[in-house]
Image (cartoon, rainbow, N blue to C red; front, side):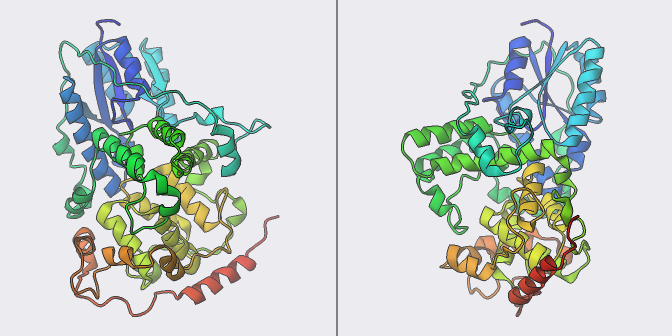
Length: 473
């Protein structure tokens, strides 16, 4: 511990508990928490940027409760860090690692430049359970299929979650931007007010939600997690995205539940590891973010045109396929979408409508508050058939039979489709307040009489394209 301040560069780790970067900073000296609105933040989709702003607001309050504060600055990350070092006399900078190619390039440059200037610069784990380079096949390469990846890590010990450290503060605080001046929800327009009704940002909310899930719901998680009309899942994805809870905390909670004999606990832990697998793939094969992971799909005749009528209907939640439309509307109202529903809407777009998975991936990036680069890319390619461990292309989900199986009473469909209901619920009506005014949609309009693409004809066209696709050499 020294008297010189230490900068904790806050990124996607908006928490005090189980934060190795914060713990290291706190052990080194008085901590200055710094969040930088750089290009990585500016380029976020509308919903994710709004949610980041709300997460920062909650986190700033949590720091205030500890006698600390969150400093906000805008600009190039390296330039801002250099300015902060000069202003405060800080001798070290600590941060949590990220794993997408742009973040790796930025952080490598930052670390090199700071060290050349005589400043200690250290990155730490915390965003994942297992660093991607630490999980290898017997041949020394990355895993390409989930099941063997799970078997490779399921008995590993990622360590116990760290307690929140005590924070000493600098003698003087540097100036900070005002969060409201950043207007991080501006692109959401009126939709921000709707999202705010359904989102509860912050570490305290995350830990409370996890506790309730483990206590009341994990027992039936394996059987109930596919029921979109039920509140049966952990809903931790949004909190993991912004680091308001650590994956190690989820792992520990799941392991305790397994020891207590709760039957759904192992499946919950497997879902946490599914996220790990997505990051493992993104780190080792970053093309998954931009191109077909399976290169033999490069000549497949998907259509990549945002102007198509099928794309417009899909985006607006007016395809005429009720399960697909309910799912899209759930996303606009709540900022998230049930996982079973994500598979259904992705299958309908990429297979029934023959639209490129990139169109859907880009739209999710714009509209999801739990957007995550690795999970979003892997999810879309998994359904489309072009990704690792993919569902076979000939597996075309039928939204009607899926609804009969997983929403037999129509609770999910009724929750988000107002048209035709005498007294539609608030969630269904909120859709019309969340979407752009330019869509000119109203609950008084009739629901589409027929699907924009019929399920049978779409499936047949997709299978024909699959059977006649150019074969890889």
